[in-house]
Length: 223
Image 1 (spheres, helix red, strand yellow):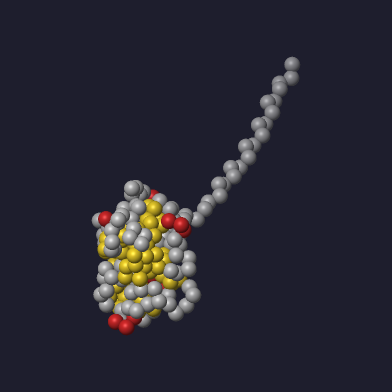
Image 2: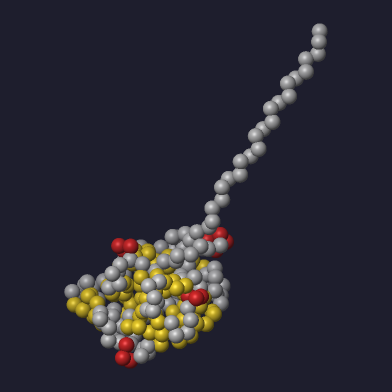
């Protein structure tokens, strides 16, 4: 009886590589502002605003912002996200001139009292300051565009709660192990807020390394 040769098994198909995607910013992590940066906040029922550091801010609070028509408004914060800092900051100081405090919209409606309050009444100092990550963007006065923090130059004009101001200094500021970075999610798709008295994007517009996303953790306040 002839010996039967077993058939040669068909080769397995080569594995198909899975497509990879560039990492993007997760909406659930804080990646924009340092914890000590402030907002002009209206607490429920209050007659006037006060400066509040981001680490004390809660969802439901109304903060000074700008709508799609660039009109100042006290808009509601829907989420306060924060994560351990994963990149260094830039400390930005903006110098004001006394004659720049008079603006076309110097007063903003308080929705709790239906009265107008001064947009910059909580801090009419001649210097505004905030600490942001280097890719965070600002609308500039001299062009219809937004400029990332790392591309700003001394002398650039930025919009502030009290009018226009000029960048006085931009200083690298390393993140420490205790630093926490914040991002705000606003109502009605509003994405321009006053941080440290300077109008800037509430959320990021840039990609982050994957390890930055992995190190972060979601901390959304609720009210």
